[in-house]
Amino acid sequence: MGKGGGCVPSKKRKPLVVSDDPPNADTDIPVPLPDTAIPESGGFNLPAKLRIFIVFYSMYGHVEILARRIKLGVDSIDGVEGVLFRVPETMVPEVLEQMRVPQKADDVPVMSAVAELAEADGLLFGFPTRYGAMAAQMKAFFDSTGQLWREQKLAGVPAGFFVSTGTQGGGQETTVFAFMDKIVTPAVMMFGERFWKLIALTLLEHYNWTAITQLAHHGMLYVPIGYTFGTGMFKMDSIRGGSPYGAGVFSGDGTREPSETELALAEHQGKYMASIVKRFGRPRTLQT
Image 1 (cartoon, one colour):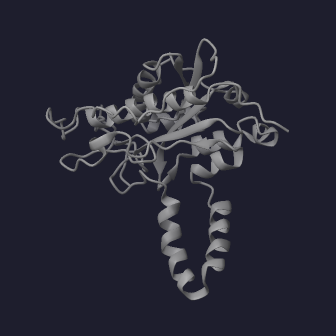
Image 2 (cartoon, rainbow, N blue to C red):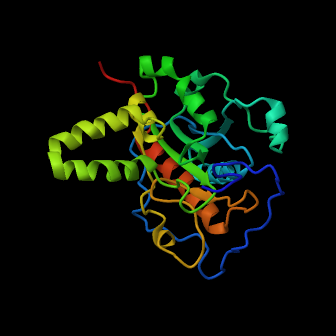
């Protein structure tokens, strides 16, 4: 799990330094994508700009670095723009000071009214992990979207995730899947598929600290990046965060900076999501 940007913040906070795993000029570079990797836009008459809200929580800055690089990717697609938002902090200033949490840049507004989410054409949520689950600040933000859920205002909106963890095993992928595998597989052998379905539904309903369930209950369209980043997803010669679920960074003890490969993957996610959103276009009004 690790400290710092992963699960347990370190009180002995050091400034961010260049990763001790510097990018390799021959391998740690953005991988050119085949023409089929990013879908083409549909034949809609789109508005002047489609907007993707990049909503994140970043305690020590690692997730924010990814968010800003994702915005570069979004903005590079014609007709789409990325808009950065922070979620509200839930910890008191005194505690943040003791944890040596740096001051946040004032060029990114706090989304204090969750109703603003309904104005987005696409959503990307970024957060650090805490013991393999999303940080409480982001969970509190999702918990405040009840009115949007009741009215299904976010139904049909493409959405995805990006994360930061302290270690390679700290939760880069959706941890509930591994948990389900450990619990459910023996049960299937003993009781059969019907029992598995019952347990799976129960887990998804009650262990909703996982991120994907937030989208499912809102009716949002989950957009993972898959392996569209190309051969960069298979490189094993350097440390790299990220997965088919979305961009990611390993923060180590909190001082490791994202590598260029991690940043390139984040930028790719922005481009990919922007192209998906552009393909869907507007309107997304539900037919009743």
